[in-house]
Length: 114
Image (cartoon, rainbow, N blue to C red; front, side, top):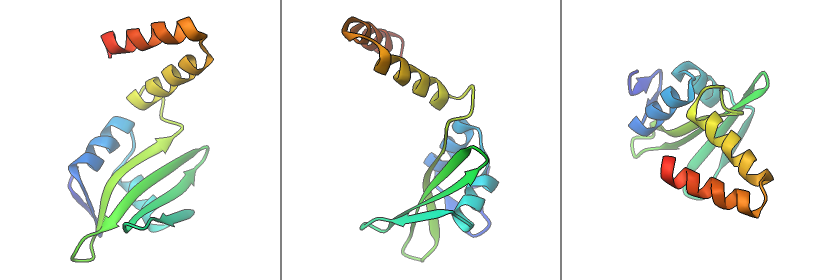
């Protein structure tokens, strides 16, 4: 994957997240260029969201000093099956349903095994 895709630049972090989360620069670009929801924060960071079927892709970007868009991060919710994000989400749901001792066990298990 290249850091540049059409008229946007992807940080190494964003490229890493794309590959970890199982979706493409094309999906991220489509989210950026034709988002359903666009939210801008005070520090100039903009969050773009677009629905693809039952999933929502989020792209976080900011303009640099040359007024080029830089993609800082991106994710898909719900996460694609088999990805690290899907495993973490399942573990979090299991933790939320657990009783007090179950939460202690799951916390220790995660600290030991990652």
